[in-house]
Image 1 (cartoon, rainbow, N blue to C red):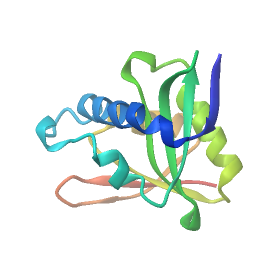
Image 2 (image 1 turned 45 degrees about the vertical axis):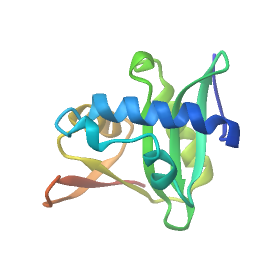
Image 3 (image 1 turned 90 degrees about the vertical axis):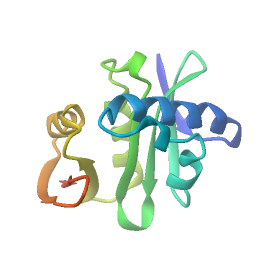
Image 4 (image 1 turned 180 degrees about the vertical axis):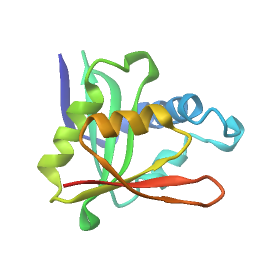
Length: 139
């Protein structure tokens, strides 16, 4: 059974590796050498992180920026996708944030866009930058 809980300091080594591995798969168009283990610490600074664990193994996480009701990161170990982990983490976000909640999703990340839309998120606008992304909202 998948268990959702707050991140502990001792979870960070596993989360760093999961974040690196997941991004290298999800962001196939990016240079994998530009991604590093330390990115997790930088990218989740000042955020509230919940982890998903299956039999004591961390299989996913979500990071929330509470002041803006914003989901910054949601990543699942590629070997454990399709088991409802993302849904459970979004449910935890709904308990921790106020509506409306927002997030950004890279335009090329079509599996993630489809997942969020299935979960009831709506696209607001696409931002045309070097790596375009969609602003999304959950009301």
